[in-house]
Image 1 (cartoon, rainbow, N blue to C red):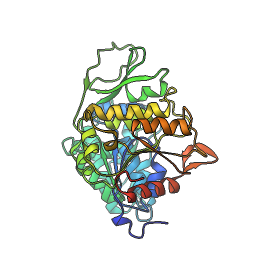
Image 2 (cartoon, helix red, strand yellow; image 1 turned 135 degrees about the vertical axis):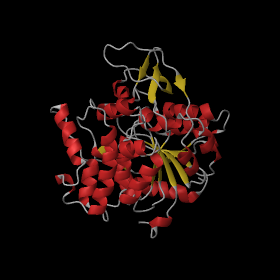
Image 3 (cartoon, helix red, strand yellow; image 1 turned 120 degrees about the horizontal axis):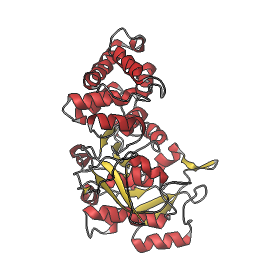
Image 4 (spheres, rainbow, N blue to C red; image 1 turned 45 degrees about the horizontal axis):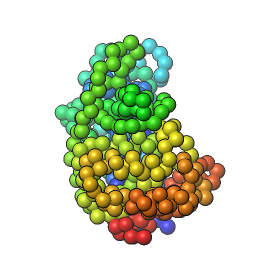
Length: 389
């Protein structure tokens, strides 16, 4: 049953990234328009890498993805959504593609022809901001037009995401809030079990051994033939807007998604653990069902332990009940490393964490959480109040 007044729905905070929450976000916006999505800006692969190298800026793709997932598709013209989703071809001459981008900056280009003038003007204005700063050797292959709009607004406003996110939020009638976890241009890195270090979020898909330590660094991911410099960890502050949204949530969720690059990466900034500990609301972890290639066999208990250890990097000696109340999983349809049952429940209880079992994974596909059922679980827990069984 949908909330009768979604505009006054509960504030649910998600530490998230990637595409795992796209379907859930669309469903969630029918129940509450107050969901907060604190998104990782550390992607370093594909066309995002070209944009980041050109401007030394945080990654914007996950923010674009979440804005579009929360957009009101009943009110926003489909041409606008299609434009923000569109990409340039992944093949062809680079200069020809750059010329096509420059032509898009003109009001008479075909891409604007069927778009309502107010939308076309706003998008073209920010695309023009990008084009004015586009390097002559910018790599345009598979460039996302929505990403270029975000980059243009970020650069125009002196490297501040606030104004462009507010503009797109209004333009797309976004039913929620999207903000980055940090505002600096940093990269995700990991020390592996053998002591080796890898840098760059795109490299986590190739993990062959467990992660010993996760950290952020200012160093760029190494390229073929490039000398690998020693990696210096850094602890940037949690973005001010993200910190503000953590002051009065109804629920905090560490959701399904790539464990390191989508969830734990968001817990690295300074101030995250303390802000979570100070929030008097339920805190829940929904682990991935099925295969997560980043886990390398890490059990569910191991995931919870790593999540708590990461939070205590910022909030030492904080009791578990201030950081995590529940692990929520589907024993009937879900598939989890290490299995479920009494042994899991007892192990979590020793850590001070409760286990809730709810049917929310597709019986036909263990990788997929069913959006409506998952949203219902979150709303149920938010309504209970702080950690109440």
